[in-house]
Length: 331
Image 1 (tube, rainbow, N blue to C red):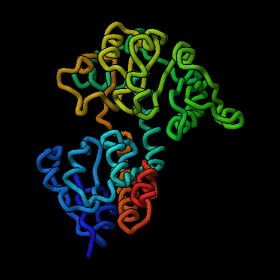
Image 2: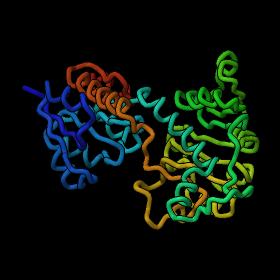
Image 3: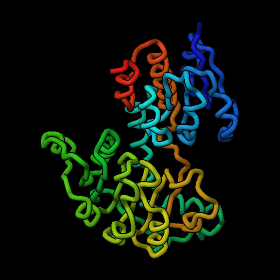
C-alpha cells in the first residue's frame, strides 16, 4: 500500500514528482496560506507531511494525524514546527540546510551594497521624477564598501560564505559566534573574533546569520543598535525576530544606524502598518534569500529525499530530532 502524503504547497521540481512516484500525494494548489481548518482536515490519515515556513505544525495538527511518520519542511528554518511534540510522538522532522548557503549569502551582500549605496532609494528618486540630472556633490551620499569593516553575527555556513564574498571588496571581517573558529580558518577568511558589543562598535556593516532560538530572540535591540556607529548599515537575512523591529524602526528614524537592509521580519508578510514602510533608509525584500531557480529546485529535491527516506523505514538525510528514532524504536 502506497504511503499517503499531504503537501501544503507544490514544492519545486523534481521534489513533488519524486514523491508522486512512490506515494499517493495530495498538494494544496492555492497561493495564499492554507486555512487552519483545511490543514487539519487534510492531514487526517496521512503518513507524511510536506510543509513550508508559515505552516504552523503543532500539537493540534499532530493530534489530527496519528499515523504521521515524518514532517519534511522545504526550508532551513523549522521554528514553525513544534519540535518537542513531534519528537515525543516519534515523528521525524526533515529540513533543507546547506543547499541555500550561496543564494542567501549573495542576497545578504546585495542588501549590503543596496543599503550602503542607497540604490533602492535612488531608484525611487528616478521613478518619481525627483532627480534633476545636474551634478551635485552632496547628492545621495552613501557608505563606501571597499576596505570597510564588516561584522558578521553568526559564523556558520552562510556567515562564512558572506566573509568569502567580503574578500573581493578587501573588507576587514569581524565575527561573533557561539564558538570560535579554528585559527587556520580565521586566517583563510581574514576574519577576527570579537565579542558582540565589540563587533557592533567597530563595524561599518553588520550582517546577521544566526538561527532563531530562544537565546537569539531580539538579539539586536535598542541597546545593541546604540552601540553601532551612526554611519553603520545593518543587514538581516536570518530570521525576523532576531531583531527587535520596533527598536530598529525607531533607531533608523533617528538615523542611528544610518540604514538597514532586511529580507526577514517579525511578522510575515510585513504588517502594512509597520513604521519601516515609511522610512527611506531601509531596503526591504520579501524573504527571497533562497529564491534562485537552482536553489529552490535543490530544496524541493532535498525535502522529497528526507520524506521518502523516513517513509521507507530509514532516517531523513537532514533531520532536526534524532531523539525521535529512540521513541519510535521504544528505546
